[in-house]
Image: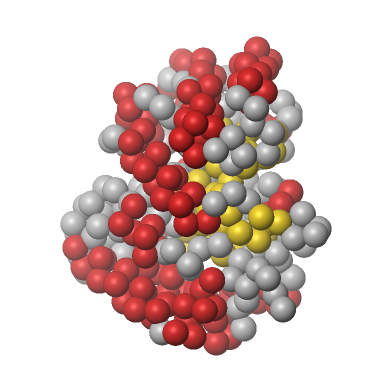
Length: 328
């Protein structure tokens, strides 16, 4: 018996998965899929913040070996990169596919085709999970693809890999569908979030979303090989000049969720996109900033998780405009 059978299989058998997908699709008519609450009819227009209509933009599908070890394992994470985003991070390392609509609009895909492709990742590449990257604005399409993939044989965990700027209302409809939540916790200061990511009320919104994720899945569970099967991993990217409020964010996780929450502390920041226009983020982090983040983890007794090395910016630079695998 598989003790880690993905929850979406049970929901599919009961018919609940179809009901959830229908409820999510209804949100597209006057869009309230993400906290932006644009209200546009995405069946007719792409004029919302994300610039995505009713069809998802799927820029890349690949076996990704550069995620956290519990996700990538030996066979990789089956990663689906959605085009568009509900934030506008001036330092976004994936800005070509998240902010440049003239580029990502060429990659629209029917959900049935997406379902086929993720099952291929499972069956051909033997990936450990299906990892939806930047799904916050494409939750209905993501869920519909999962629904269509189950009768094709999908049976591995689903990873929801988001920027943390998620709607609690929508997340509640994902309960039992998502096995592993992988959100960012970027800032603890709304003014900083607004300046560098263009998001209003980020602090409260992201914290409420991550609380809901934790309520649903709890702490990370892995199999005997250390591969993630269920639970929460919170990513935190260290920014120069502590614009990421690292200690405060880690303290919130420890105090409001649990010190046992798995944290992925990321040192891969480099000044991508428009970052050179902003002096405080126009460089990589220094050793003092890195050490301060490590000390915060130790002082808060947060021992579960992953820590990137200082040289991470040298090899975490995707290239989506080139043919082939974006990380090779």
